[in-house]
Length: 496
Ligand code: SF4
Picture 1 (cartoon, rainbow, N blue to C red):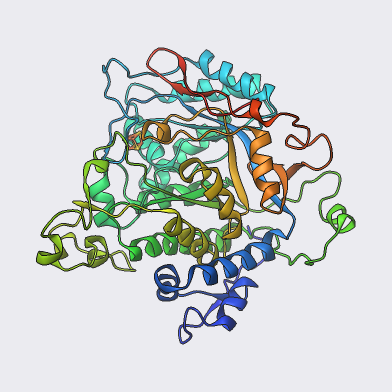
Picture 2: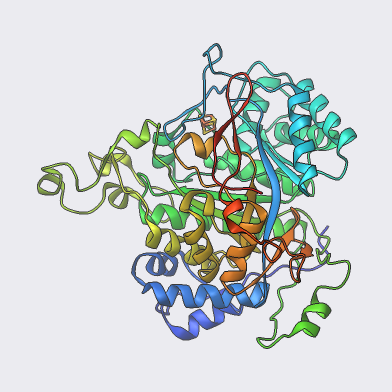
């Protein structure tokens, strides 16, 4: 039961979205944006206005000094998948020559490598593989916890959970009951939290076009709610910059915000959000981040983070679509409005038939669009603690800029990645480079855990970036991508 009553900030629908008084109140956590105001900010506010206020909100929550990262490893245990998402270059059918499922020992070996570089968690997700029984997962989780009790297992996104319900046929009268039955067993075996994979875009017309065979958004959100009810902390994600309209992005964030309100109301409140004095010096830092460095308030489960990234098109069926404005005759026939914007509604009730080219034309995202989404999500999602910057898709320097547009977290030092890299993204950083990016942006880098608690502040001569004597050595490294038979070295971009 919650120990405090959670009350969301109040909306002021009569005010313009760019009203400085409204935005100042939002930055302080004392006002909430309406969806209409969110859309107005996303599409029309000057970029520097958005950045300024998103940064103010971020500083009100996270202070002026530390920005975080985590050392974890993406382990994609299988690429066999019954779904056919059109944006996916990772999935394979059973029997394909490069289909794979990792042996438990391969997974343990990967975790041992992670531990050797100071890693604290694994992000374990895979395709929806009908060949794997529940006991395969339970034995794997128990095996991980026996060998690596301190490793946090962040695993199995909502679409996988919904397929587990389909494959394992658990008892229960409702979907919620069935999810709970499976989740309790996974949690008992060692699963600690759920990643926000598979969120994509919630609006049904978009989701039906791009997520073939994947759960709908109600099932996605319900899975997370059940996880929250079991005390788990989860993240939420959004993949944008494809066929969706701008209103679809706000609808997506709105759903996350509503369900977060519900989780906070039903299960507890997040850690207190305090303003940190702008002139806090080293003494102030020591007071705020005492020796234990653990600040996490015990509370029921909820979303701890939101991470948005743009669609990566290489090797994907969706990527074969033409971009809006590049097909002769489109504008003469239909006007210049992007089909996704014609169809999209803030409440998710868009109808695909409202534009004949809906789902057949892309609007890819660039740096400015990415930063607008980053900043808007920080302001709109007033009840989410952490916003992650997506350097993996946007590149290290746009990722660094994200720290000025509302992001407080640089995500993960990337040891291995198989899903986004299959769609063409090959950025790879080691801890020293990640720390340098944070420091060059004007902050002190700090390693965090899955709960966004700081576990180590990287200050002084032993900081990973400050002890580097030759940065050239940090340009060559190893990012592992899993192939059908073994982990192959495919990308050389950074490391030590
Ligand atoms: S995105 Fe995930 S669920 Fe969709 S096809 Fe790829 S592996 Fe399967």
